[in-house]
Length: 224
Image (cartoon, rainbow, N blue to C red):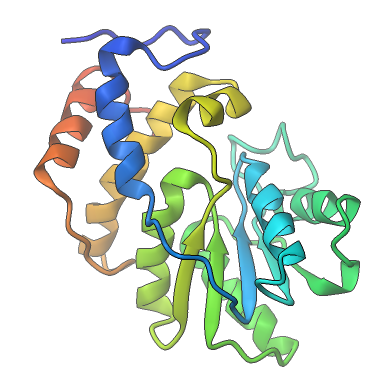
């Protein structure tokens, strides 16, 4: 059994790299980007959500952006004014018109991100038949599964800031957090489907085995 990485390590340890890469690939939906009625940026500790939302807005993939998210224990220090508020500030600083951005500052989980975003869009009388959901790379599959359950009539496309695993880890600055979050999101694919929070999705044997090895190695802080 391999050992858990030290908290101050700045790279994914070689001993677990193959398993981490397996989970990383699993959560990437590999959707082909296309124009949608609205882009929704899901709040988190990852500013890359605002980065990709800003880029895709400038590429005319959607005319509206909803940034959604309050704070979690993992984000309050980095984004003290709230995840959605900080995302909005980044987008405006990088050329997105303020009037093209809606802010939903209350959501504390993915289901609320989508529920409250839909409420906000309805209040602004913005019709939605397609949505481009932007999230952390390892949240794509869960965001897709949640949206397909909660908003089944809408065409869903998922995207993240297109970084390779090592570049993403460097951008976050905490390999342990990234692995813990990957493991936690993998568990949620099945648990949330069982609880009725998301549609069921296939989990290949190699993904399940990689997940189990990482859990056995101690990457468990994000398990439920």
